[in-house]
Length: 175
Image (cartoon, rainbow, N blue to C red; front, side, top):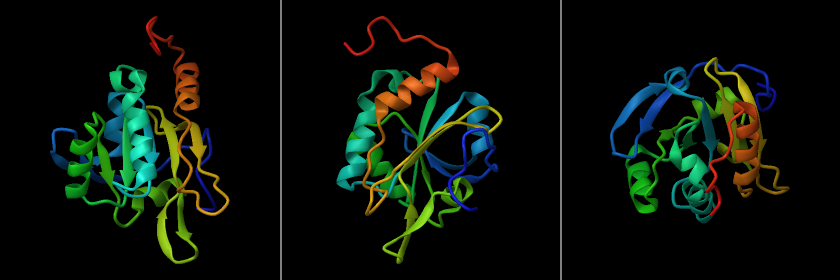
């Protein structure tokens, strides 16, 4: 792929091990997840890195995403299932996390790159997918040195999803 998948394009269905908040880990196709409800797939570097902790705390603390009524948030990184379990427990996350050690999921979205030309990793990015695996919104890290250093703008992502789904915020949102 010549770069990240664009809004309006359909991503290929990929499968990977998904670690759920209850600790279970099973191979789950992305197509199966979007069949339940739209998915916000967030690529990040590794569990327990300081910027990733900040990112996942932002998603966790943003009540609208935590409700899970309109969209399901799913993370994806190179971390192992065991590390994902510890990360989920440590941060008390209600979101499942894909393990992507060979970066096959990252490759499908066109966000794999080499840090300083050496280490392969996922560019920090978020993709909002509908039931047809069509990208309805995307955010890409643009840090000049390392695109894994950017943190997704959770409020901006929320607003884009609200607009895309045509849903209104609860009256108590943000308080």
